[in-house]
Image 1 (cartoon, rainbow, N blue to C red):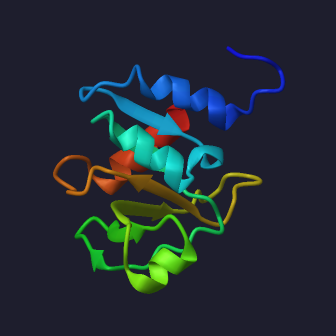
Image 2 (tube, rainbow, N blue to C red):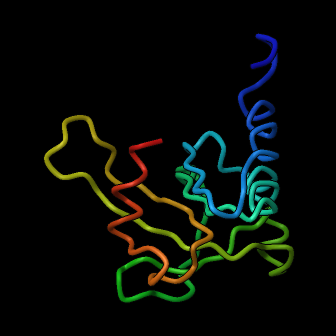
Length: 129
């Protein structure tokens, strides 16, 4: 907890010190900024965060489970230059038959290989945040 004036993103940074490599950190799209992602990955924990709707995530390699590899960049300038990015796995899905569901959900993960976690498993885990 912090002062009322402290942002949620600032408070989240305090959580990263408690993450361990045997943990999975789930987070909503508010937290999926490059600086927070970079800090959280330093913990060694597995991450599963919802991507912001305005995130530009280019499909670089498609996996058999439908997820794909992309690169998360700190800025558009870095993306244009192809520098300073971090590799991520993206899982996209829609919730059919769910009233008021958004048309598309995109999850970022540092679990880059489908054998570590299948895309369907990741999508099923996300609502448990």
